[in-house]
Image 1 (cartoon, rainbow, N blue to C red):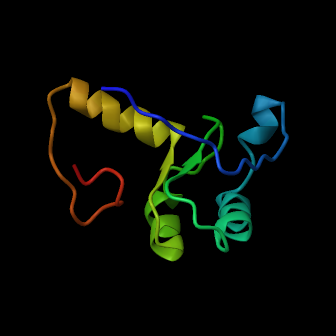
Image 2: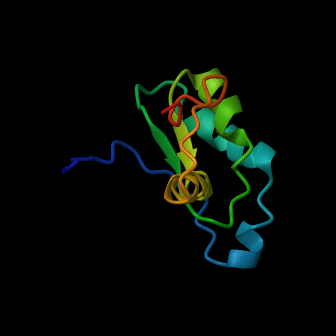
Length: 99
């Protein structure tokens, strides 16, 4: 199965030091996502860079922006669960991974 994706918008903190990137607060990440994407019609939003502590923001931002949100760690965790044979559904959780 082939998928086609296009990048509609890209935003960065421009922090190349992994140690400093890991210190970016969840409040700063949340503010940046809301500031940059609240007026956009973009779905899903992917928060990349594994040092960012954004995992817990997935549901919060998804509800606030009414779109699907994922992070690199979030996607990896979901994939690892599926590879382990755990195929549960989370209807009360984030929109992207209900199935």
